[in-house]
Length: 184
View 1 (cartoon, rainbow, N blue to C red):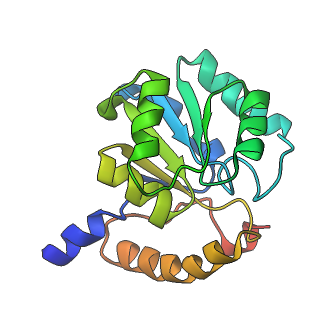
View 2 (cartoon, one colour; view 1 turned 90 degrees about the vertical axis):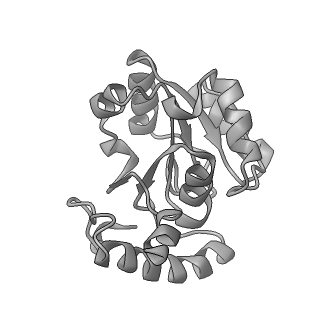
């Protein structure tokens, strides 16, 4: 039991093949009004500034559906804020995830409480751990690309092992639409 309790820190409430698969109606039914998005390999490929039409459409749809969104990234201020300006949403850079400070700041920016806010990201050790420790609804997405910061690449090895454990214990299910050949 203690083992599964420890695993719960890394267990997302939802595991999706892509940020574009967000179940908007389900989130609304849960009372979610605020969305905290990671940037790299969640919203855009790592270290990319160009926002795709698909990404713009997603954020426009979320806004039209009544959600407030915010980028929270461990990346540098200039890039994070440039992408946020294009999307028309606030941003917090150099967030220090999984520490709680940036999540607390995001709630203030969004004007939402913990129970009505979700964090969406591609990493167990930053987005999901941080969101779970802070009491947020957590959504793990499959990374957009294999290209990423070298430190993140090293953590992915541990993350893949942990994901196998979580799936093996029946704590999460692998997204149906995901296949390892589908990643860039």
